[in-house]
Image (cartoon, rainbow, N blue to C red; front, side, top):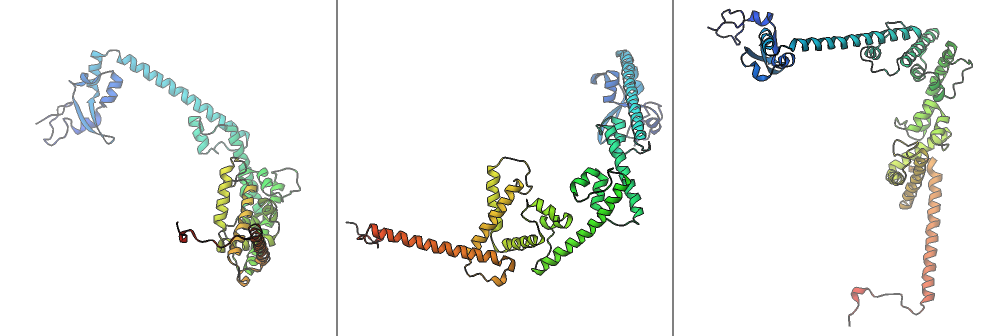
Length: 397
């Protein structure tokens, strides 16, 4: 019967190691890799020592009783203690410097929080990570200043919201002010013209709330108006229409700016929707537009003010749209000489009638040109037989 290597206690015959359970729990064992690094030993020098293997972090590791390793190192590597003490001292010094830097950054953040009127406990993940590592936040003062301004805006909004009896204004405007401040609101909503001169004070936010409430009503009104007008022409409001969405949210001025002045009234919006529905359903408009935009994007390398759909500037894109509309309508009218106008929206009747007249004039002019060409050929060759024998019927002499 085997005995424990350390305490010499008899072991059960089914024991996996030559160590009792008590020694395995109380004694210190060291892995081979750690022992080589700490005691400066090589693989061959471990041969006379007692060892055992066990599963270690999903791998099989070899372990030694650390007292054995230490005694062996004292005999063949007496300088290991000096080196180990030197490394431990360096590690301690590095840790001390790191702790001093953390404390310095913690004091810096506390001073900045106090400076901008925030409680010292008002740290978040990014500030905590900056304190521990010195990373994540490039400019702590700028970050805390923005954080304080945002908190101030939130406090202002809560104050005004309670004053307005929690009226629900257009939340998009309030969220924009909360996240980006006054300048972003004034830039996106040029119709908001507050009477107070101090941007960002409580009175300014109060007027912003009033504007948001009015704008919310305007949005509802514009949406209902657009739905009713489209319904009169047998259409519904499309969720993917950028023009309709812009009109509902921001009004006609924004639509005019989006389309470079091409659409400046509700009637033109309705006409555009009816026209686009007809073009997509009846003509090859999409293929024509795709071909035109592709040719423009291949020949133009300027990336300024690009449209996200085709990589063109707004002017170039809308130029392609107008050309595609004209070509697609022309091809449709030309290939359908007997169009039943009762199946088409009355808004498009003038355009289609004008195209029919234009195509009729073109056909008449082409017929006249063809007749004149034949007449000139008769005058030039009066005796020439105009009927020619097909080549496959001619006799070969």
